[in-house]
Length: 356
Image (tube, rainbow, N blue to C red):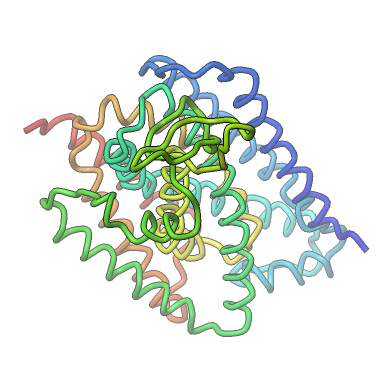
């Protein structure tokens, strides 16, 4: 039997993937170097879509879990938002409280993911630079990276939810992990990052399993080639060519690997805001799908936001402490959203005011 949650989830995924495919196959079919103006426009579009979804949750958030009566409402709130105090005789009032709380936690998780993604985008830029990827191919790699990230986040979030339901102490582990990462980022902020591509374990592992064509070939992930001496040459099947992976494919693997590492911050952070896996998933995915445009925007103005990393550290410390103290202190969704938004805005303003 297909539940209301499953139906809503399928519709949501179909809509997101549909928009991405239109973007990939129609709008950006021809590879080109994205300008800051184009990136800014698309960033605004994706942010607007995310806030439109917040509007939907504000008025119709109960549709996600198929809440039709007070019993349904009590069951869902007890499971995902036990701090909400319901009046058993006021279903409409309780439903309104639940919708508004759901919306605020969604927005908090969305802003968290966007903020934490700033550092992640710089790592992606480092990956592209290390592999020598052409700027006009950035889009192609990021498109597939985002589709892979959607699958990975789905697995991590719903597995995480299952574990939290069984073992409440995992939230404490998440809190310690976030605080550790905050301290690590703070003390490593002045170190110059680099990637030793040739000796990286992922490259060596892929080289053992697949034949690796050592040159880029347009936007192709795979090519037919044959080895003549120490060199590979493009060759058809009749000329003895065999399938090889290209450096562009390895770059996608690196991007996906990086997203797995990023998820160890962003997903525990989102669970500090809401225990509802659907809220966490929706916020993560709508933040991720806008990362490609945000990447090109930040790549052009990265040097203007030097204090964002400090903001990320503060947020990780805040949400880590929130997870560690969740059994003793309940921080309202409104206050969580206010803290997250304030840290983000203050970091940006401080970066603009203190340029040196």
